[in-house]
Length: 317
Ligand SMILES: [Zn+2]
Image (tube, rainbow, N blue to C red; front, side, top):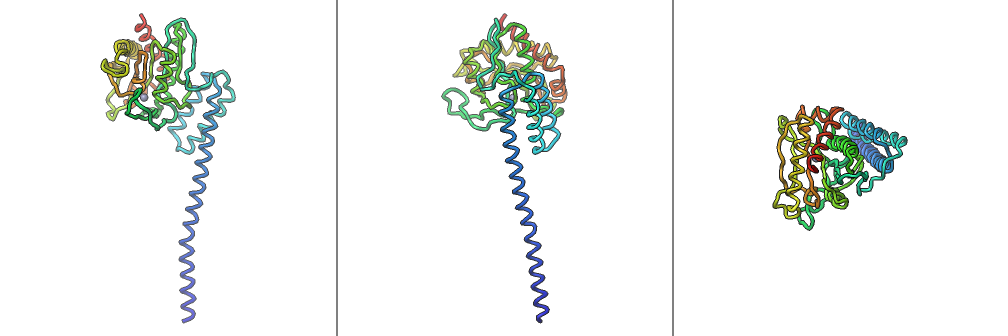
């Protein structure tokens, strides 16, 4: 009887022990995971401030390409670490970049003022802002954008590559150029981007984007402006429409990308806040294999920039 009781007691202890073990393991696991996340976050903050203060063009675009390929090929934790270390290395050699303050980077020329907005940024900002001056409609400040389904290239990086090539092309042609951003590590909302264009009294505001669709066969370029009845800037419709048409025609001629059409929309924050002629160019579909692979190619930014610049020339003729 006594023996049976002792055996039963042992069995109880054993069972309790087994149950206790996984619980301990799980809680240890959670703790270490939290620690890792915190570390990554602090690394990221450092990266942002480092990239903000410095850098030169060539090194920067190399860094960004590396970042993009590491993002597509590794899990999120590794990505963050890789991004941080790559950027940190790059910033040591970069010294000539103007500070990024959300106020635009200015290049004085003799010609009209063209403000270039490379759409999106490394991380979207899901906070809300009015989609027009005095509007009750609140929209996300800035989305993270789409990505190449076949190449893995992010839209914010593609937009930046083309924008930097366009900047160089326009400077060569004598324009005064203002860049909304020259790095992916910024936080500038769509309304703020338009206000920068307003502050510089842009003669043309070019917002560079790429498209996405659930249907992989959809391809081609379209440009977007407000409608004539837009309550905020319908008075700028004629100029914006003409700018959109000029850019669409010349871009498609230069790149050979299929010409879709000029689309009119009054729901877009980045258009509604504009007091300047504005166009959004959706260069092609990152969800279409032909468009995606072409836009991700090394030769694309220069070809695209030439096309957009030809369109801008035509607009000012
Ligand atoms: Zn976009």
